[in-house]
Image (cartoon, rainbow, N blue to C red; front, side, top):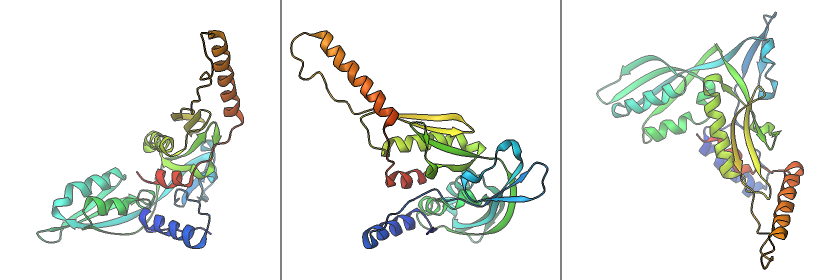
Length: 259
């Protein structure tokens, strides 16, 4: 069963209740919006609901992205923060209206993908809870998107794959790798986290292995024995890295959703 939520806080509360009250196993993934693609030589719009469904770029004539017309009402002193928030989400200003001496209404065209994740949470934070937000469908507009894959020791984690706008691809890759580095536990072998776009690595983080002092029981000055033990440890870690499996904790999926 798939479920959608009003924000990250709503999702986190719902997740905890499912786990605590029903002992359910919950998988959290990035929310997706229904993109469309028109292939070369065709006039048919093909729906894309999953990052793995994104067709080969060489076959695509253009991509289409859903947009919404958002209306934000807030106290006048929050004007700067609200403008910055909307602009940072690839918004296009449509209207500014002073409702009265203390309240302002902004209308922005916004990509739905920039709204569904944490826009509402950030709006409330930036306005100390005083801003309101509403939106209506504005159809589809041409866009430039790519699929970003996250690799853990060279293996792609499908649940972490996402569709991002090309202008934010490098930034998103670096941010996701950095966050995963903080939440994936250290292993006995090195863990390499990479962001990949069209087969090209765009960001990388490395989790250093846990270190065990294998020379602790070597007494005296036998340097050659110490070197042999260290070399054996090094070879063992290389082997573990080849065959070892890294389990990504559930907390990681929630962490990467937060900007």
